[in-house]
Amino acid sequence: MVEPRLFRFDTLALHAGQSPDPATGARAVPIYQTTSYVFPDTDTAASLFNLELPGHIYSRISNPTVAVFEERMAALEGGVAAVATASGQAALHLAVTTLMGAGGHIVAARNLYGGSINLLRLTLPRFGIETSFVDPRDPDAFAAAIRPETRLLFGETIGNPRLEVLDIPRIAEIAHAHGLPLLVDNTFATPCLARPIEMGADLVLHSATKWIGGHGVAIGGVLVDGGRFDWQASGRFPTLTEPYAGYFDIVYAETFGPQAFAMRARTEGLRDFGACMSPQHAFYLLQGLETLPLRMRRHLENTARVLEFLAGHEAVSYLLHPSLPDHPDHALAQRLLPSGAGSIVTFGVEGGREAGARFIEACKLASHLANVGDAKTLVIHPASTTHLQLGPEQLAAAGVTEDMIRLSVGLEDPEDIIADLDRALR
Image (cartoon, rainbow, N blue to C red; front, top):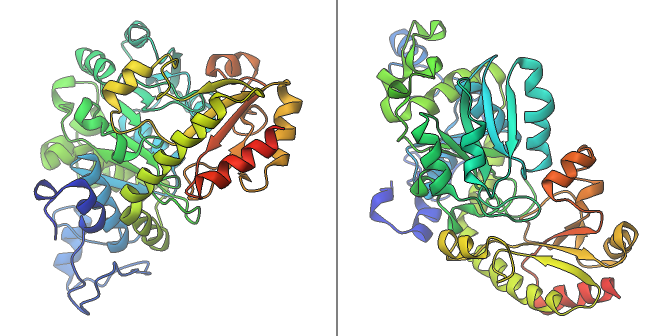
């Protein structure tokens, strides 16, 4: 098996977490389509159930195909372990519920994906977990919102849909000064463009459905544990530092050290909530990872061409991308995202909501659907779709305007993408 410290990123994307199958010699990752695993004897079974031995018991908790995906994602993000989930939303839910219960509090950027905002704003409060939303461009706002019951700071590397860039090093510094971990959603950047753990983040999540998979065929999420946060020194996380009756009073921080968070998320979170990734989807996502570096380079090349076209178009009322000199976070993007700022382009269409609707319906190549990060170019009107559940106040806070179009630039010939946009804007 490839040792992550010995190889570069593009090699890890192909090899990390896997060796040829010892039974058959198969080079590709096998799909272990099984619910459960035969124990050699009763003593081994007992040791597995007591977390004394590593191994597989039931595919809701772990599976060999899924494990390869987890190890590869941990290697690419620079973490010590990863837990794959049924979706990106499941990964966020798992992160929160592993760290806190009723009475807990989160400080989150207010520019999150609409589904994340709904989970934090509407669903989790029913279970006693509250969230304060703050300006992602103001690190001091994160500090000001911290309470005695706060257990987590959360933001996105690149915000959705206005593409704000999170000052991860500064916010990590604030979190750690208060004895708190920082969770970063790295979906829009991918580990090709940003590695939040190296910048100071403690936990990273992805909707692997997007660029990781890259082909729109599999839903999945992943949660990566950086392994650096000192849970015991913080004194705020009894789920990791106090005996857990679910496994014979085990103390995760003592037993599993740097992997304490990931082990608790897996052995309690996946066991009890059940939001596991299927082996079939893990296989599809592994296929995506193998070409991720190549795809991201093409995504960035095409995005640069599209930006050049849109910047001079009379029907475009505004244009947002962190690579543009007039973007508010351009300087921060140059520092934190030197390899590129992603392949999402956000722009306004002269004429407001009706003009935006006409534009989308006039696109023939770009697909109108609720996804990003596909090999194909995608387009959507956020105010009436991905952020529809937000009220006027939340829409304004997220910076979602009536005339906003979100474009996920694909891998087609850039001239064809531009021609499609040009026709739709006329």
